[in-house]
Amino acid sequence: MASNIRVISTSMVQAENYRHEQAQNIDLTPWDLQFLLAEYIQRGLIYQIPQLPEVYDQDEEVGNIVVFYMKMFLSSTLDYFPPLAGRLSTMEHDDGDTISFSVNCNNTGALFVHAVADGVTTSDIVQPVYIPSIVDSFFPLNGVKNYEGTSNPLLAVQVTELVDGFFMSVSVNHSIVDGASFFHFFKSWLAIACDPTQLSKPPTFQREFFKEINFPIRLPRSYFQQNHDKFIPPPLKIRVFHFSKENVAKLKAKANSEAGTKEISSLQALLSHLWRAVIRNRKADPNEETSYCLLISGRPKLQQLPERYFGNVLQVGAITMKVKELLDLGLGNTALQMNNVVSAHNEEMFKDFLKTWTETPKLRTMGNMVSNSLVTSDSPRFNFYGGETALGTPIAIRSGPANKFDGRITVHRGVKEGSIDIEICLAPNTFQAMENDNEFMDAVTL
Image (cartoon, rainbow, N blue to C red; front, side, top):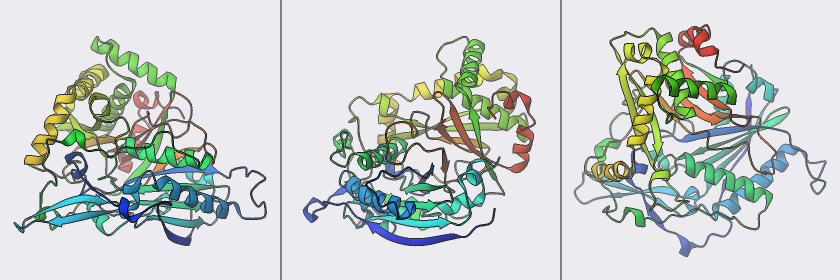
């Protein structure tokens, strides 16, 4: 698919009702700071051309109308989410060796890009087996690290017009939001586009939960002076596998039956099935260790944390075993070990992380996460397909090129209720083997 992306306009969108006396600095917590060396969260939704109400000028191009109103409603939404219109701020300490980060809610603005992909249809994006590389150009701020939010927008939106629809992408700094906060912002934006009068569930930026932390947290300057660009992924492909509600239920039943329990969740069973398939088809050494890394949310486990807390509440949990154990002991054993790791991340473990990380900070990079590992982010709990919006219902979700490597997995709720979509980045020969693996493909909905 050959096409040129034409940028029609770029602009900064500021909060509509910002006043300078509202400016504040928000300290970043250990859950935020751990992602400074990673890249932005990038998600994109594909829409068909919406049916415009009669109140709109029917002679005006649809793309211009969508861009105009989404910018206007974004400005209204930023009133409730001031960090997203700000920039990261740094403080250098007198010792000369340490630096601290916070969010300066100065309303510098979020980036908004309007572009056109000539000759590209929604089917060109959704129908191919592998996600076409042109999708990368539908996302802004590619390659920007989170700590570079001092000089880059913390939020960027790109609306790319297609022949029969449009692709709306969001890139947001992972050091100020996790998946739950990102979803809260995105759904709030679409809700305001339907009813601009108010937002029923605004976020909270309170830091009372972290009263035992001595802010601002100091980090060694050397962390940001080293060359962190050494990780260059090999040639990779990206594919979305669809799993129906019925097939997910079968995997869950099988995993629980094999493990003699009822505790294994649908997602744990599905990810275990995927892990075993990837390692089996990589033809890995049976005595080699393999790991599965999960970004585990502490929100359901921390009762004192405000319900709509805005920021990161994530820790990485890893399941590690020998390849022969993964493949020989079955789905139930793998899923049970995954369940045990998730269950072990209780309130005490999340609070301990805050204390120990502050004492010995460790920043996550691609280089220290990808050694024979699979890494999963996002959750089917984030329903981008549900609820009333001014744009209609998206027909698909895609992620951007940020943080991609061999074994990177993004989980989305499927279009049909109860279904799950898995977007995975792998080497071409691994995909080829998996696509001929009946044990794996029998659970995939084509």
